Length: 93
Image (spheres, rainbow, N blue to C red):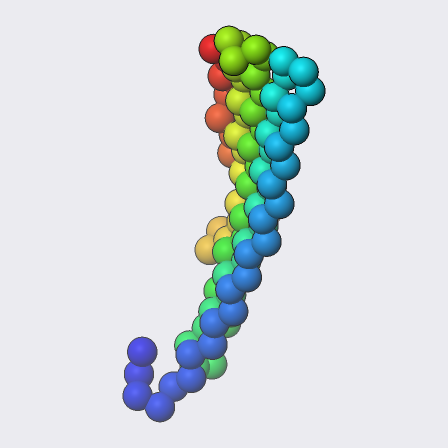
């Protein structure tokens, strides 16, 4: 950062968690949103945005399944490619 230039930054994050047991069934879920915006001097603002989720299920502490996913974006990519969905395949155990 150069002397005399202004640095602006705003970051916020919200998370929601859920957990519930129905007899032998356990279900949990998590959702998270975060956004980071920053700039130095008169440059254009940079940003990053994330939408993240996770759902887990188990039956009788013997059978498990989990799904994770994220929808992430940044101004560093072209207008048609700024956001993408990333996921981890369903795992069962």
